Figure 1: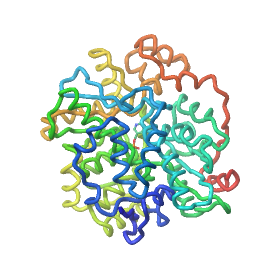
Figure 2 (figure 1 turned 60 degrees about the horizontal axis):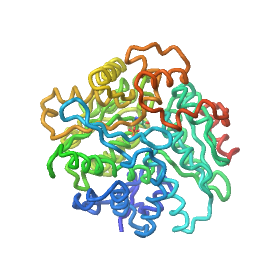
Figure 3 (figure 1 turned 90 degrees about the horizontal axis):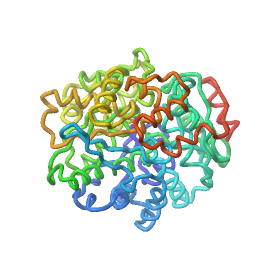
Length: 490
Ligand SMILES: *Cc1c(COP(=O)(O)O)cnc(C)c1O
């Protein structure tokens, strides 16, 4: 069986279902498989399947204390009837030679978070009964915009669970906000925090340490990508993309494929790292950041420095200065002692520098690049005009980074370039309209309709209805009120 250890204490070991239940280790670390050897597999055995089959194969490796019947049942429940594409994550060939877009946003809330958050509540309820866990689970989640609605949707009315989502006041698009404040479910709450995403995330992490049981019979857990149950379902679409490239005849078996990932909390790209370690022919992973370029600088210099201005950009889900999942990579590359030291430096001084050997190892697989709002907007316009392909502002950052990457020595000659597309363009109608040179002074609703008229692409049902639903969650709190809010509302 695979042991899951804490990145801050390799002596602390739990099963996969316990790791999913807890979300975060008691010492503040993140759960990871103890050894990479145990996840290696001939990738042909995984890709020789449809999406659900690939999910079964990947989940069975990582979640090895769930029975195979259980996994099959959970995969069915997670992906049947929830996505508007049969492929779940379809790959689209673009007008640019060698470039493909992996559309991850065909789920209920139109962002890639749905791929994992359709699964997590099912994994968690199963973990509860497997471990004879009698407490109800209260999910606390900080969101930069998209996790919130996907998590509220996923956990809505799931027995034995409740969820509170904290989002930055004024830090999300109007559509994103409406998706959260109109979320259904008698066990759901969305609350605005006066601060940015990092403040909300730090607050939530602190609550896990301070009040793991906010009252008798209730235990906290997490739906953020710090939960390993969020990360593993995301590994599946790296395999799915490879399979679709083979089906299109775009690559031959064994070719190295590069993936370009619009990055915030480093979760999505960390899933790509696991895919590579499992044995998928991944060439390089390009970590694409927006103007909050802390990761691009880190991957260039080895110096992580969160003491910098926080920029609000048109790709708000990537407006993050402390990328939690990097801790997992540091553990594998730098070892337990160094990783722990760096995390300590980060919390005490706001910065740390890894050794040049460690940096070299990370750079043998990762490239860090960033693009500005203007560069992203130019990418949206260019792809729309030349190819009639419309992408959202987050995908556009990755697209722009792909262009820079392909101009560089290291990025010249991959067999294919897969840009992960993390949200529907309709979720960010205003910025997308502006990018293609249209007037966007209307309301979000008007902008969405206008974008539809121009492009002809259908508006996802979940987004179209958001303006007519009743607002159910109106609370606004300060960061230092998060604790009392949780205690009162659990
Ligand atoms: C969450 C999100 C990202 C960033 O993903 P991470 O796993 O946090 O790196 C990028 N784009 C969109 C649209 C998102 O919702």
